[in-house]
Length: 405
Image 1 (cartoon, rainbow, N blue to C red):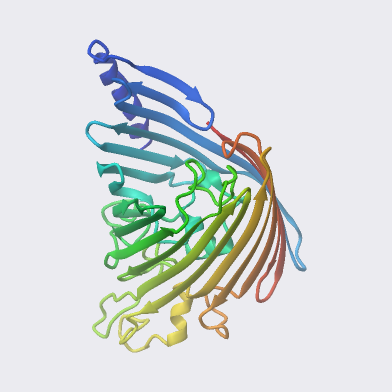
Image 2: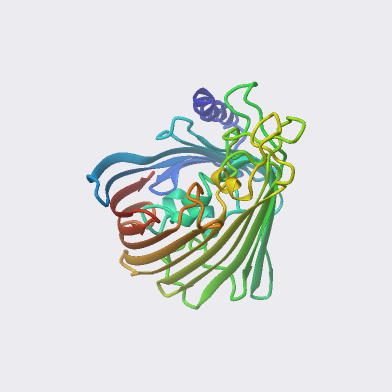
Protein backbone atom coordinates (compact mmCIF):
# COMPACT_ATOMS: atom_id res chain seq x y z
CA UNK A 1 0.00 0.00 0.00
CA UNK A 2 2.88 2.39 0.76
CA UNK A 3 4.29 1.76 -2.74
CA UNK A 4 0.89 2.40 -4.32
CA UNK A 5 0.58 5.71 -2.48
CA UNK A 6 4.04 6.77 -3.65
CA UNK A 7 3.49 5.68 -7.26
CA UNK A 8 0.11 7.37 -7.78
CA UNK A 9 1.48 10.97 -7.65
CA UNK A 10 4.40 10.05 -9.91
CA UNK A 11 2.22 8.35 -12.55
CA UNK A 12 -0.28 11.21 -12.59
CA UNK A 13 2.44 13.84 -12.79
CA UNK A 14 4.15 12.09 -15.74
CA UNK A 15 0.87 11.62 -17.56
CA UNK A 16 -0.23 15.19 -17.10
CA UNK A 17 3.21 16.53 -18.00
CA UNK A 18 2.95 14.70 -21.33
CA UNK A 19 -0.24 16.63 -22.01
CA UNK A 20 1.31 20.06 -21.43
CA UNK A 21 1.34 20.79 -25.14
CA UNK A 22 -2.46 20.63 -25.28
CA UNK A 23 -3.18 22.16 -21.88
CA UNK A 24 -3.93 25.83 -21.80
CA UNK A 25 -2.97 26.54 -18.18
CA UNK A 26 -1.21 24.54 -15.49
CA UNK A 27 -0.24 25.69 -12.02
CA UNK A 28 1.41 24.49 -8.84
CA UNK A 29 1.04 26.21 -5.48
CA UNK A 30 1.52 25.48 -1.77
CA UNK A 31 -0.35 27.00 1.14
CA UNK A 32 -0.10 25.85 4.73
CA UNK A 33 -3.31 24.08 5.64
CA UNK A 34 -4.14 23.34 2.01
CA UNK A 35 -1.09 21.28 1.05
CA UNK A 36 0.65 21.10 -2.32
CA UNK A 37 -1.88 21.72 -5.09
CA UNK A 38 -1.55 21.00 -8.79
CA UNK A 39 -3.99 22.32 -11.38
CA UNK A 40 -3.98 21.18 -15.04
CA UNK A 41 -5.98 22.10 -18.11
CA UNK A 42 -7.46 25.30 -16.67
CA UNK A 43 -7.88 23.57 -13.30
CA UNK A 44 -10.22 20.93 -14.72
CA UNK A 45 -7.88 18.33 -13.27
CA UNK A 46 -6.81 18.94 -9.67
CA UNK A 47 -4.34 17.06 -7.52
CA UNK A 48 -3.40 17.57 -3.85
CA UNK A 49 -0.74 16.21 -1.50
CA UNK A 50 -1.20 17.03 2.18
CA UNK A 51 -1.18 15.83 5.75
CA UNK A 52 -0.67 16.87 9.33
CA UNK A 53 1.22 15.86 12.46
CA UNK A 54 0.11 16.02 16.10
CA UNK A 55 2.90 15.56 18.67
CA UNK A 56 1.66 15.63 22.24
CA UNK A 57 2.23 15.06 25.95
CA UNK A 58 -0.15 13.34 28.40
CA UNK A 59 -0.09 13.21 32.20
CA UNK A 60 -2.38 10.60 33.79
CA UNK A 61 -2.88 9.84 37.48
CA UNK A 62 -5.27 7.22 38.88
CA UNK A 63 -6.13 7.06 42.56
CA UNK A 64 -3.60 5.06 44.60
CA UNK A 65 -1.34 4.62 41.55
CA UNK A 66 1.81 6.28 40.26
CA UNK A 67 1.39 8.95 37.62
CA UNK A 68 2.21 8.19 34.01
CA UNK A 69 3.87 10.65 31.63
CA UNK A 70 3.68 9.99 27.90
CA UNK A 71 5.16 11.85 24.96
CA UNK A 72 4.24 10.60 21.49
CA UNK A 73 3.00 11.51 18.05
CA UNK A 74 -0.76 11.13 18.38
CA UNK A 75 -1.33 11.27 14.62
CA UNK A 76 0.87 11.49 11.53
CA UNK A 77 -1.40 11.79 8.50
CA UNK A 78 -0.46 11.75 4.82
CA UNK A 79 -3.08 12.21 2.11
CA UNK A 80 -3.34 12.20 -1.66
CA UNK A 81 -6.47 13.40 -3.45
CA UNK A 82 -7.62 14.47 -6.86
CA UNK A 83 -10.58 15.63 -8.95
CA UNK A 84 -11.50 15.37 -12.61
CA UNK A 85 -14.17 18.03 -12.98
CA UNK A 86 -15.21 17.15 -16.53
CA UNK A 87 -15.57 13.47 -15.65
CA UNK A 88 -17.26 14.30 -12.29
CA UNK A 89 -14.93 11.95 -10.41
CA UNK A 90 -12.73 12.38 -7.34
CA UNK A 91 -10.54 10.15 -5.16
CA UNK A 92 -8.95 10.31 -1.72
CA UNK A 93 -6.28 8.22 0.04
CA UNK A 94 -5.23 8.92 3.64
CA UNK A 95 -2.91 7.12 6.03
CA UNK A 96 -1.85 7.53 9.65
CA UNK A 97 1.77 6.45 10.06
CA UNK A 98 1.49 6.56 13.85
CA UNK A 99 -0.48 3.27 13.59
CA UNK A 100 0.74 -0.21 12.73
CA UNK A 101 -2.06 -0.49 10.12
CA UNK A 102 -1.91 2.98 8.59
CA UNK A 103 -4.59 2.93 5.89
CA UNK A 104 -7.58 5.03 6.97
CA UNK A 105 -9.33 6.22 3.82
CA UNK A 106 -9.28 4.97 0.23
CA UNK A 107 -12.27 5.85 -1.91
CA UNK A 108 -13.49 6.97 -5.31
CA UNK A 109 -16.55 9.21 -5.71
CA UNK A 110 -18.85 10.08 -8.60
CA UNK A 111 -20.68 13.42 -8.55
CA UNK A 112 -23.68 13.26 -10.92
CA UNK A 113 -24.65 16.80 -9.85
CA UNK A 114 -22.99 19.50 -7.79
CA UNK A 115 -24.91 18.48 -4.65
CA UNK A 116 -25.05 14.66 -4.89
CA UNK A 117 -22.15 12.27 -4.21
CA UNK A 118 -21.85 8.51 -4.63
CA UNK A 119 -18.74 7.09 -2.93
CA UNK A 120 -17.29 3.58 -2.98
CA UNK A 121 -14.42 2.47 -0.75
CA UNK A 122 -13.23 2.96 2.80
CA UNK A 123 -14.02 6.27 4.50
CA UNK A 124 -15.26 7.88 7.68
CA UNK A 125 -18.92 7.04 8.00
CA UNK A 126 -21.64 9.57 8.85
CA UNK A 127 -23.81 7.11 10.82
CA UNK A 128 -22.07 7.87 14.15
CA UNK A 129 -22.42 10.90 16.42
CA UNK A 130 -21.59 14.33 15.00
CA UNK A 131 -18.18 14.62 16.69
CA UNK A 132 -17.12 11.35 15.02
CA UNK A 133 -17.82 12.91 11.61
CA UNK A 134 -15.33 15.73 12.28
CA UNK A 135 -11.84 15.43 10.77
CA UNK A 136 -9.05 14.63 13.23
CA UNK A 137 -7.29 17.94 12.49
CA UNK A 138 -10.35 20.00 13.45
CA UNK A 139 -10.97 18.92 17.05
CA UNK A 140 -12.30 21.47 19.52
CA UNK A 141 -10.37 19.68 22.30
CA UNK A 142 -7.15 17.67 22.20
CA UNK A 143 -9.20 14.55 21.45
CA UNK A 144 -12.75 13.36 21.00
CA UNK A 145 -15.13 12.88 23.92
CA UNK A 146 -15.51 9.57 25.73
CA UNK A 147 -18.88 9.15 24.01
CA UNK A 148 -17.06 9.07 20.68
CA UNK A 149 -14.09 6.96 21.76
CA UNK A 150 -16.28 4.60 23.79
CA UNK A 151 -18.73 3.78 20.99
CA UNK A 152 -16.39 3.95 17.98
CA UNK A 153 -12.79 3.30 16.96
CA UNK A 154 -11.74 5.32 13.91
CA UNK A 155 -15.26 5.58 12.50
CA UNK A 156 -14.08 4.25 9.13
CA UNK A 157 -15.93 1.59 7.16
CA UNK A 158 -15.80 -0.08 3.75
CA UNK A 159 -18.88 0.16 1.55
CA UNK A 160 -21.10 2.39 -0.58
CA UNK A 161 -22.09 5.88 0.59
CA UNK A 162 -24.68 8.26 -0.86
CA UNK A 163 -25.24 11.83 0.28
CA UNK A 164 -26.88 15.00 -0.99
CA UNK A 165 -27.16 18.64 0.04
CA UNK A 166 -30.46 20.44 -0.62
CA UNK A 167 -32.26 23.62 0.41
CA UNK A 168 -35.72 25.13 0.26
CA UNK A 169 -35.36 28.84 0.75
CA UNK A 170 -33.18 29.29 3.82
CA UNK A 171 -33.93 25.78 5.11
CA UNK A 172 -31.21 23.24 4.35
CA UNK A 173 -31.18 19.48 4.74
CA UNK A 174 -28.56 16.78 4.11
CA UNK A 175 -29.75 13.14 3.80
CA UNK A 176 -27.09 10.40 3.82
CA UNK A 177 -27.30 6.60 3.57
CA UNK A 178 -24.65 3.87 3.67
CA UNK A 179 -24.31 0.15 3.04
CA UNK A 180 -21.06 -1.19 4.53
CA UNK A 181 -19.37 -4.44 5.46
CA UNK A 182 -20.16 -3.94 9.15
CA UNK A 183 -16.60 -4.76 10.22
CA UNK A 184 -15.02 -1.29 10.17
CA UNK A 185 -11.84 -0.41 8.30
CA UNK A 186 -9.64 -3.08 6.74
CA UNK A 187 -12.70 -5.24 7.23
CA UNK A 188 -11.47 -8.15 5.13
CA UNK A 189 -8.48 -8.77 7.39
CA UNK A 190 -4.81 -9.27 6.68
CA UNK A 191 -5.15 -12.07 4.12
CA UNK A 192 -7.69 -14.30 2.34
CA UNK A 193 -8.08 -16.50 5.41
CA UNK A 194 -9.21 -13.59 7.59
CA UNK A 195 -12.63 -13.09 6.04
CA UNK A 196 -15.43 -10.71 6.87
CA UNK A 197 -17.87 -12.00 9.52
CA UNK A 198 -21.61 -11.48 9.77
CA UNK A 199 -23.77 -9.58 7.31
CA UNK A 200 -23.96 -6.00 6.09
CA UNK A 201 -24.39 -2.83 8.11
CA UNK A 202 -27.22 -0.49 7.10
CA UNK A 203 -27.18 3.11 8.26
CA UNK A 204 -28.11 6.69 7.58
CA UNK A 205 -28.10 10.25 8.86
CA UNK A 206 -30.33 13.27 8.34
CA UNK A 207 -29.13 16.78 9.17
CA UNK A 208 -31.47 19.77 9.21
CA UNK A 209 -30.36 23.43 9.00
CA UNK A 210 -33.49 25.46 9.91
CA UNK A 211 -31.58 28.78 9.91
CA UNK A 212 -29.46 28.14 6.85
CA UNK A 213 -26.09 26.46 6.33
CA UNK A 214 -22.98 27.46 8.26
CA UNK A 215 -20.50 29.82 6.62
CA UNK A 216 -18.22 28.12 4.10
CA UNK A 217 -15.16 26.84 5.98
CA UNK A 218 -17.07 26.76 9.27
CA UNK A 219 -19.30 23.75 8.58
CA UNK A 220 -16.85 20.94 9.41
CA UNK A 221 -15.84 22.09 12.90
CA UNK A 222 -17.59 22.23 16.25
CA UNK A 223 -15.90 25.48 17.33
CA UNK A 224 -17.12 28.75 15.77
CA UNK A 225 -13.79 30.03 14.49
CA UNK A 226 -15.35 32.23 11.80
CA UNK A 227 -17.88 33.91 14.12
CA UNK A 228 -21.26 33.34 12.50
CA UNK A 229 -22.98 36.72 12.07
CA UNK A 230 -26.39 35.24 12.85
CA UNK A 231 -27.43 32.21 14.86
CA UNK A 232 -26.88 29.00 12.88
CA UNK A 233 -27.70 25.48 13.95
CA UNK A 234 -27.86 21.91 12.69
CA UNK A 235 -30.10 19.25 14.21
CA UNK A 236 -29.24 15.70 13.24
CA UNK A 237 -30.03 12.08 13.83
CA UNK A 238 -28.24 8.90 12.78
CA UNK A 239 -28.96 5.20 13.09
CA UNK A 240 -27.34 1.94 12.01
CA UNK A 241 -28.16 -1.76 12.08
CA UNK A 242 -25.21 -4.18 11.97
CA UNK A 243 -26.43 -7.62 10.87
CA UNK A 244 -24.06 -9.86 12.83
CA UNK A 245 -21.37 -8.09 14.88
CA UNK A 246 -18.33 -9.74 16.48
CA UNK A 247 -16.50 -6.64 17.73
CA UNK A 248 -17.30 -4.53 20.77
CA UNK A 249 -18.26 -1.42 18.76
CA UNK A 250 -18.92 -3.10 15.41
CA UNK A 251 -15.65 -1.96 13.81
CA UNK A 252 -13.83 -5.27 13.54
CA UNK A 253 -14.47 -9.00 13.61
CA UNK A 254 -13.54 -12.21 15.35
CA UNK A 255 -13.27 -10.79 18.87
CA UNK A 256 -15.78 -13.35 20.18
CA UNK A 257 -17.76 -16.35 18.92
CA UNK A 258 -21.33 -17.37 19.62
CA UNK A 259 -23.25 -20.36 18.23
CA UNK A 260 -26.72 -21.63 17.43
CA UNK A 261 -28.06 -24.99 18.60
CA UNK A 262 -26.43 -26.73 15.61
CA UNK A 263 -22.96 -25.48 16.53
CA UNK A 264 -22.84 -22.92 13.70
CA UNK A 265 -21.55 -19.39 14.23
CA UNK A 266 -24.35 -16.99 15.11
CA UNK A 267 -23.57 -13.36 15.85
CA UNK A 268 -25.90 -10.82 17.50
CA UNK A 269 -27.26 -7.83 15.62
CA UNK A 270 -25.96 -4.48 16.87
CA UNK A 271 -27.94 -1.23 16.75
CA UNK A 272 -26.78 2.34 17.30
CA UNK A 273 -28.93 5.47 17.49
CA UNK A 274 -27.71 9.06 17.78
CA UNK A 275 -29.28 12.50 18.13
CA UNK A 276 -27.30 15.73 18.18
CA UNK A 277 -27.52 19.49 17.84
CA UNK A 278 -24.81 22.07 17.11
CA UNK A 279 -25.30 25.84 17.48
CA UNK A 280 -22.88 28.63 16.54
CA UNK A 281 -23.11 32.38 17.01
CA UNK A 282 -20.40 35.08 17.07
CA UNK A 283 -17.71 32.76 18.43
CA UNK A 284 -19.92 30.80 20.81
CA UNK A 285 -20.66 27.14 20.13
CA UNK A 286 -22.80 24.51 21.81
CA UNK A 287 -22.76 20.80 20.94
CA UNK A 288 -25.14 18.29 22.50
CA UNK A 289 -25.11 14.58 21.66
CA UNK A 290 -27.06 11.53 22.81
CA UNK A 291 -26.34 7.89 21.93
CA UNK A 292 -27.99 4.54 22.60
CA UNK A 293 -26.69 1.11 21.63
CA UNK A 294 -28.51 -2.21 21.88
CA UNK A 295 -28.30 -5.82 20.69
CA UNK A 296 -30.93 -8.08 19.13
CA UNK A 297 -31.06 -11.57 17.67
CA UNK A 298 -30.01 -13.25 20.91
CA UNK A 299 -32.62 -16.02 20.96
CA UNK A 300 -31.29 -19.58 20.89
CA UNK A 301 -27.70 -18.36 21.18
CA UNK A 302 -25.03 -20.35 23.00
CA UNK A 303 -21.52 -19.54 24.20
CA UNK A 304 -20.19 -23.06 23.43
CA UNK A 305 -20.22 -24.91 20.12
CA UNK A 306 -21.94 -27.93 21.66
CA UNK A 307 -24.98 -25.76 22.29
CA UNK A 308 -25.32 -26.69 25.96
CA UNK A 309 -24.57 -23.31 27.64
CA UNK A 310 -27.06 -20.62 26.70
CA UNK A 311 -26.09 -16.95 26.50
CA UNK A 312 -27.55 -15.07 29.44
CA UNK A 313 -29.07 -11.62 28.73
CA UNK A 314 -26.44 -9.66 30.66
CA UNK A 315 -23.50 -11.55 29.11
CA UNK A 316 -23.87 -9.84 25.76
CA UNK A 317 -22.77 -6.57 27.39
CA UNK A 318 -19.34 -8.13 27.97
CA UNK A 319 -19.02 -8.58 24.18
CA UNK A 320 -20.76 -5.47 22.80
CA UNK A 321 -20.70 -1.92 24.16
CA UNK A 322 -24.31 -1.47 25.28
CA UNK A 323 -25.96 1.45 27.03
CA UNK A 324 -26.63 5.18 26.87
CA UNK A 325 -24.29 8.15 26.64
CA UNK A 326 -24.53 11.90 26.27
CA UNK A 327 -21.99 14.62 25.69
CA UNK A 328 -22.33 18.40 26.10
CA UNK A 329 -19.64 20.90 25.18
CA UNK A 330 -19.68 24.68 25.23
CA UNK A 331 -16.98 26.97 23.91
CA UNK A 332 -16.00 30.46 22.86
CA UNK A 333 -13.31 31.40 20.33
CA UNK A 334 -12.06 34.96 19.92
CA UNK A 335 -11.28 36.50 16.54
CA UNK A 336 -7.57 36.55 17.39
CA UNK A 337 -7.49 32.78 17.93
CA UNK A 338 -7.86 32.19 21.67
CA UNK A 339 -10.50 29.70 22.79
CA UNK A 340 -11.84 28.24 26.02
CA UNK A 341 -14.08 25.17 26.04
CA UNK A 342 -15.79 23.00 28.65
CA UNK A 343 -17.20 19.49 28.22
CA UNK A 344 -19.22 16.99 30.24
CA UNK A 345 -19.68 13.37 29.17
CA UNK A 346 -21.73 10.64 30.85
CA UNK A 347 -21.79 6.92 30.05
CA UNK A 348 -24.35 4.52 31.54
CA UNK A 349 -24.17 0.77 30.74
CA UNK A 350 -27.34 -1.13 29.93
CA UNK A 351 -26.79 -3.44 32.90
CA UNK A 352 -25.55 -1.22 35.72
CA UNK A 353 -25.13 -4.13 38.17
CA UNK A 354 -23.06 -6.32 35.81
CA UNK A 355 -19.34 -5.83 36.48
CA UNK A 356 -18.18 -7.35 33.17
CA UNK A 357 -19.89 -4.79 30.94
CA UNK A 358 -17.60 -3.24 28.33
CA UNK A 359 -19.25 0.12 28.96
CA UNK A 360 -18.43 1.38 32.44
CA UNK A 361 -20.38 3.94 34.44
CA UNK A 362 -18.36 7.09 33.71
CA UNK A 363 -18.52 10.83 34.23
CA UNK A 364 -15.89 13.04 32.59
CA UNK A 365 -15.33 16.80 33.06
CA UNK A 366 -12.92 18.60 30.71
CA UNK A 367 -11.57 22.14 30.42
CA UNK A 368 -9.85 22.98 27.16
CA UNK A 369 -7.68 25.95 26.18
CA UNK A 370 -6.58 26.55 22.61
CA UNK A 371 -4.55 29.01 20.57
CA UNK A 372 -5.37 28.95 16.87
CA UNK A 373 -2.37 30.53 15.19
CA UNK A 374 -3.61 29.95 11.65
CA UNK A 375 -7.03 28.42 12.07
CA UNK A 376 -6.98 24.65 12.43
CA UNK A 377 -3.82 24.37 10.35
CA UNK A 378 -1.51 25.60 13.12
CA UNK A 379 -2.63 25.45 16.74
CA UNK A 380 -1.70 24.61 20.34
CA UNK A 381 -4.24 22.95 22.65
CA UNK A 382 -4.36 21.87 26.28
CA UNK A 383 -7.01 19.92 28.15
CA UNK A 384 -7.50 19.12 31.84
CA UNK A 385 -9.90 16.30 32.70
CA UNK A 386 -11.37 14.71 35.78
CA UNK A 387 -12.78 11.28 34.95
CA UNK A 388 -14.89 9.38 37.47
CA UNK A 389 -15.16 5.66 36.72
CA UNK A 390 -17.29 3.25 38.72
CA UNK A 391 -14.33 1.99 40.75
CA UNK A 392 -11.64 4.65 40.30
CA UNK A 393 -10.88 8.25 39.41
CA UNK A 394 -8.38 9.68 36.92
CA UNK A 395 -6.83 13.11 36.59
CA UNK A 396 -5.54 13.75 33.07
CA UNK A 397 -3.67 16.68 31.50
CA UNK A 398 -2.84 16.91 27.80
CA UNK A 399 -0.80 19.22 25.59
CA UNK A 400 -1.04 19.01 21.80
CA UNK A 401 0.67 20.77 18.90
CA UNK A 402 -0.73 20.56 15.39
CA UNK A 403 0.83 21.44 12.06
CA UNK A 404 -1.19 20.92 8.88
CA UNK A 405 0.87 20.97 5.71
